Every structure is written in C-alpha cells, then in structure tokens.
Length: 389
Image 1 (cartoon, rainbow, N blue to C red):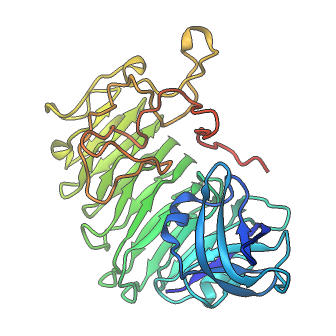
Image 2 (cartoon, helix red, strand yellow):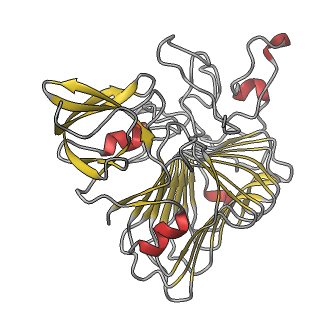
C-alpha cells in the first residue's frame, strides 16, 4: 500500500543540518496529521530530483513549517532550494500528474497524496476520483483543508467489486463539493470492501446527498468524524446500513444527519437545518448531540432547541453586537456544546487536529476556542471556504 504523490508536491527550502540536507516545508504547507504519521526511518520523496532519502529527524510547527533531516550530504547532494518534496512511507517514489493516472497505476489500499494541481500552486481540483473495482485512500496534504476536490456529479466515488480492499480506506483533510454526491461509498452486491473513514474534512454547496453510504456496504465499516457540512440541499449524512458518526457539525442543510437503526451518532451538532437536524429510524439512539431544533431525542445528554447565542459559533468580533455569524463550524469557549460530549476511543483530535478534552470533549467538529486568533504566533485559522488561488 504505497503512498502516491498526486500533482505537484510542495516547493521546499534546503538547509544545512550537521552536514546533511534538511528539507523545510513552508508555513501551513503540510498537514499536521500527515506529519504525525511520518516517522524517523520513513522517506522524503523529491519529485524534482527524482529520488528519495531516508528521514533521520523531524520537527517544526504547522504555522512555521515542518522540517525533516535527511541522509543527503550537504554540498554533494543534487537536492536544491525550491525542489518539490513530500514525506512518504516507502523508499520508492511514485508521482502522478492527476488522479486518473494515479488510480490507473494503483492497487487496493494505496494512498493518494493530494498536492497542488500545477507549478502555479493551484489548490482546487476539478476532478472525478473514481475508485471502480479498487479502493484507496485520499489525503489532502496542505494544512487545514486547503486542497479542494469538486466535480459536476460525484467527486470521490467507490464502486464495483471492492473485495480486494482489506483495510478501511481513509479520506482526510479535504474540502469537497459536488453537484450530486461528493462522497459516495457504493460497492456492488456481495462485493463490499472494508469500508471507509471520512475525517477532518469540510463538505459544502451540495445539491444532493453529501456523505452517502450505499445499501451494499457492510454495516459498521463506514465512519465519518470531525467533519463540517455546510449548505447541503438534501441530506448531509445518509446511509442505508448502519454507520458511525462522531463529532460532526452540519449547518444550514435541508436535513442534517439521517440515520438508520444501526447507526451510532455521538457528539454531533446541527444548526439551522430546514427540515430536521436529525432524522431517521435510528433517531432514538443518538446521544450527546445538540441542535437548534427539537429533533434530538429527549435525553439528559442531548441539547435540543438551542439558540445561536447558546451554541456560540465563531463570529465576527468587530460586528455590531458580536452577532455577525459566518458559516463556521467551530465554537467559542462559552458554548453549551463545550464539554458536553463523551470521549470516543481513537478520536482525541478535532477537525484542526487540536487535542480534545479527554474527559469532557465538546459537541461538534471543534473543541472550544477562547478567541478566533490566539495565541499570536500559533494562528488558529478559520475554515477556508474558498481557495485563495
């Protein structure tokens, strides 16, 4: 299951570190979740130089740039400032100009590392990521969902015979749109794979269903967590088999989370959904959820009929009366959602990869923030609704 670079990796600086090359990524130029997966002994792939080098040490921060020391000898190496590099987990280098070429070359369980579209560093891909009879993972490589995938119809679509998929696929740190269903796991009858996990992503401006799991998937193998759904014209999250839904925020959708009896829903927030924040045959089983309507079932852990002021989403502090609310899934520290969730094993980070309270996590995709931008050095960025280039 190799990592395959899709598009143009990040242009990096090369520095001398004890006589060896240190590769320095630009600020906000590498997802902190991927950085965390990379260990000493993994590799840096240099697409420009056409080779890889073992990682001997790593460090840095998201807002200053992560760095990786390599086995390349300083002054002898052909690696140069501006070379395009990516951390990968195998020694072989695989780079593809687009998703179609990457999928044509891949095997089940491969990871597609989504970088810039071109050397002009454009970040929004107009593409169809069609996993037909093969299933892999897609990871947005720039920090905080800067990589956008969109398509006229489906955007990421798993279909056909997925029996060769023996580990759960992951789609992480992406910004997804699509006219129909931007994320659809839809195996053929009797040919379901190991399912999928959509995490730390932002899905918006959808005319149909947004996250959809088809009837032929195996119950309990598909999960969506730490995601923000905004402006969905139908259902934000929908499924025929039971799925796992944790720490999600749905805002200004027709229906937020539509669930069947076997679905597990915990720590989710629905704001201003036209028909219902929560709906479906499994409604009675949801816990530790909140909504601006009365659809969460009556339970001591649920918060129904909450106002904007009680939920306290991020707002423009310069606005009159502090009541200018952008479409944003994060909450302030004084929200009723802060500390009202329940811990979920393995989900100790929020949508921005910030640690959750291990005992009393917040409801929704974000832990509570004291202010929108703090501390001064470590900028807590809002969700990018549109790419800047």
